[in-house]
Structures are given as structure tokens and as C-alpha cells.
Image 1 (cartoon, rainbow, N blue to C red):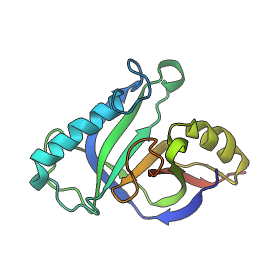
Image 2: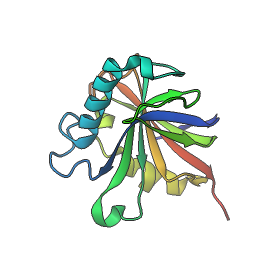
Image 3: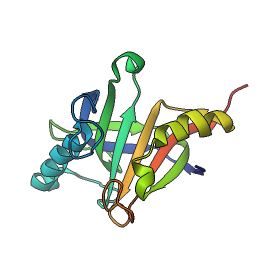
Length: 171
């Protein structure tokens, strides 16, 4: 698995947040786990309150942000945010949160079809990252879903991008 490296300016994501082990009860099937339920809640809110979302960068692109926690190894709990990118934060409704990510370098992996349901996390974090000239920069991972390429999780003609903030390895 080989990424392309891109430089990206500051990014602001607005959306809904979940904290915990998203796979605690139902396994990894997207429609049954907590991340899938979070997307369902966000999409329904988006549909009902579309006018509340100002300054979107591209309404055809959804973002999923995973933020590591110190207790992850013990609890499998972490933060997940789903939403859209905006140019600036303004008048957010109560159930909507914002996360501003600093600019920097991203290793972008494109997953196609069955690669989405394979253990891509190990391929990135256990295999590629230690062998590369880079290290994690922010302790998070982003998934980029665009309407032109994403057709469903694991569908043969579907694609999703995994964005890993990286920096040149120190020392």
C-alpha cells in the first residue's frame, strides 16, 4: 500500500461526535456499528437543517475523523467525528461540533472495493509508517468520502481515501 503525499492548509470539519468503542456490540458492518449510526444521525440532521451549515467547501464530500486516546489500548475507545469541511465556523447549532486541524503533510491512501474491509489500519500503521521516512503528526486519521467515488463500504466499484497527518521522522 503506497500513499501519495500532499500538503494541505488548515482544515475545519463541522459535524457530530461519538466517543467510545464503535464496534463494541455489532462488529464492523458499517450499518450496525456506532460510526454507521453516527453517519445516519448526522445525515438526518443535515437534511432537516441544511440552512444551518454555512460556508461548506464541497457538499459532495463527507469527512470522518478518528482521534486516538491514551486509553485506547485498554478500552478500544476513541473519538469519531463525521461531517463536512467549512471555510469558517459561524453560528453552529447545538448538536454540531467543530474541529480545526492545522495544515501539514498528509499520506493519502486510496482504498478500492475489498481493500476497504481488509485490515488497512495495520497495513498503514504497522507496515507502511514504520518503514517510511515519516511519523504520525497529529494522532488522528481522516476518511474522505466523495459522492463520485464512494458507492458503499466494500463495494467493488467504490473508493474511499484515508488521510494520515505525517511529518518527517525526527532523529
